Image 1 (cartoon, rainbow, N blue to C red):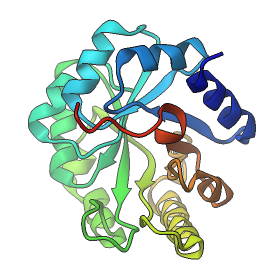
Image 2: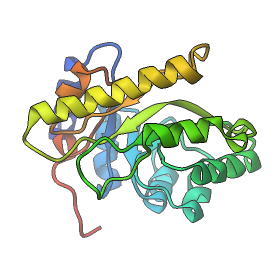
Image 3: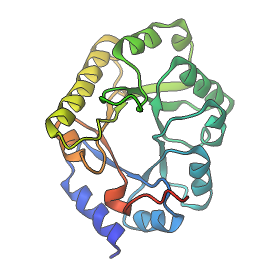
Amino acid sequence: MSAIANEITKIKSSLPATTRLIAVSKTKPVEDLQQAYDAGQRVFGENKALEMRDKHEVLPNDIQWHFIGHLQTNKIKYIISYVSLIHSIDSCNLLNEVNIAAAKKDRVVDCLLQFHIADEDTKYGLSFDEAQVLLNSPEYKAMNNIRIVGVMGMATFTDNQDQIRQEFRNLKSIFDRLKEQYFADNDSFKEISMGMSDDYPIAIEEGSTLIRVGSAIFGKRNYAV
């Protein structure tokens, strides 16, 4: 068994039934993804639309592709026909552009609202108030080709586990408030995407349903790609 297969097996064996693994494969060659696929992994996360498109074209068609990076509106067209979940919706404008593109493909595309929970200005995301404005807007209410199914957030890159835990707890609180106020009767609103290679055990304890794990599976990213 390959090192990649070993890591996937190890991580999956530690997960509760309520949490799924997204293998974050950005910058990694298709050969690495194929090893993960052969080990039973079917959900992969990418953060660049063109890279996702190129991998989608050559890898097995039963893979679920999750887009986890900052999505530029002019790149939506490269992923809209097959993407399973977009994690990174951080504005009404972006959501509307996804809706328009999905309508052209006669699809309803699942999306997560991304929240800024970290103590870092470089990370993207909505505040709770901004999310309320979005969800109350007539523009959102007219969108028929997207479906909001949960939330996503990234914790601060720090060794302070108490801070990380509090940030994840904050995202879970945001999820709970949105569920109560906007999605109480919507069973599809159930996903909390939080936790990466260094902090996913904490995220699971705080309610994560989707962990995004890359370097722990594939090794360090290849930034030359």
